[in-house]
Image 1 (tube, rainbow, N blue to C red):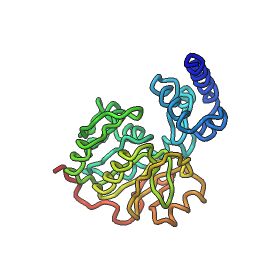
Image 2: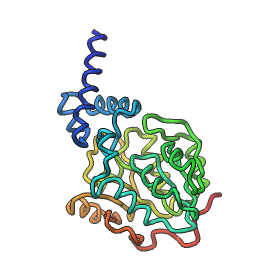
Image 3: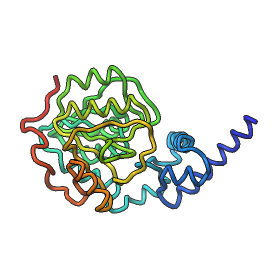
Length: 266
């Protein structure tokens, strides 16, 4: 019985890779395709991503060969570029370990006038040979997103007052905030938003599936850098988010989004 289950899992994962060769697909669509739970598909995707067979996206996945051919207009690369336009010289910038934030790190590689603080190993690897100054938060490694979390991470965060925090999101709701797979991640995102002078959430699809059981609430006025249709983005604006589209790259959105003079590392 166990052997048949393992064979079934291998066959499903092989078919997953084939399906993802054509286009990005949401977790919900994949679960419906195979008649399994969302958690089962997420485990499959985590294993395949760890093996380099796929690339995780917001709420789904894509074949990495497709990703290398270039991001779609308004996709995660455009979101990262728009977010990078928010960063001023002299600022301390906190980068979450969430999806898409490593793309923002890539946009910031050549900056010599900022400091990046992160708990994400993908961001650390992206900036390891870059010009930007980097501070790494300690903690316990959590897979598959390669994030440092836990008491040590929280203690380190409480000693920092970053100008900007950029949080990744696999699912969003205008009223409830950021969808998270476990309560520790939700608490950490809330603390990041609390510590920062201004917080921005990054997503290439504002209407991404919210299929996890936990939520990180964000304060009113939190920024959203997103691609999405007008109706999706309008819902966030009505809920008092500061919404910035991917086409606006040359100025910071929102009034009073960060104090002058730079953040502080205490």
